[in-house]
Image (cartoon, rainbow, N blue to C red):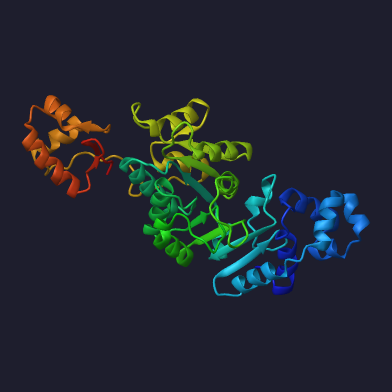
Amino acid sequence: MSAGASDAASWLRLTLIPGIGGETQRKLLAAFGLPEAIFAASRSTLRGVVGDKAADLLLETDNRATVDAALSWIALPGQHLLTLADNDYPRALLDIPDPPSVLYVRGNLELLALPGLAIVGSRNATPQGESNAHAFAGALAAEGLCIVSGLALGIDAAAHRGALAAGGATIAVIGTGADRLYPARNQALAAEIAEKGAIISEFPLGTPAAAANFPRRNRLISGLSRGVLVVEAAVESGSLITARMAGEQGREVFAIPGSIHSPQSRGCHRLIRQGAKLVETANDVMEEFGPRVSAETRPRVTDIPDEMDHDTAKTLACAGFDPVTIDELVTRSSLTAEALSVILLRLELDGRVSSLPGGRYQRLAE
């Protein structure tokens, strides 16, 4: 259960004091037990634990307006405040070095107790990357894993959508206040997650998107999960931060390899060189966690259907799975550019090929 109104007020009073960060909060809680005891302590006692400046902030800061606003927010249906003392606080986060003192949650609290798998990757994902994230999320959610991601554009959004499409569980960990949505383009997705899954944040209500928030957010994505699957990531991607945190937290790290020509694959290749498990099917993940997924739910590249006409099948075969131009396809297939344009348009409409900037095309795994 989430904190009651009186308990919530004292936890909010503690955590909404500017200048009293998570480390100081945990030091105080370790010394005094609960927020009520912290505020009942004398100034000299507090100074002995956290120093003069923090003690003065604790006793002199008047944050009743922000506390009351947060209490009004959690009083609404489907909106919760979880504290370190609550039974519903995710057990997995208690295993990390710096669990948040409070979590703001929109949605189903029961999902926080499910075994989680984080699926993360590039915001500037390729169509193939988004397709992979959607397929793996659906298959793994169908096996009982809760798909955890960050509600960002690209791989994150595709993973959430894949879990929802499979009727599975998904949690979005966000880097803003729980009353704010970022990016705005994912507003409809966020509403669906709040209704069918859960959105969580450690940041106070009203917190805007800021670059420093997202690395902090990433440790919760990995911390809530048994492992992290990186689908696509450039070498400087924030997803590699999540993977590093996962390793530090004792979680499994998985990565999907990609084209040697794609910048979005290089981060995954680096992780694999560093010891991440190379993933080609959902079974590769489930082998680490439990029963194998069935062949029916395993994402994979399928063979070309028998009924496909010869020129279309030839076009797909010549395209491979790397981005390719029509000129390259002309050379490989001996078909004319006009014939290929018609075939590629039909394949794009069928969802087998995606057009990319620069006049390139990429075959999608089915």
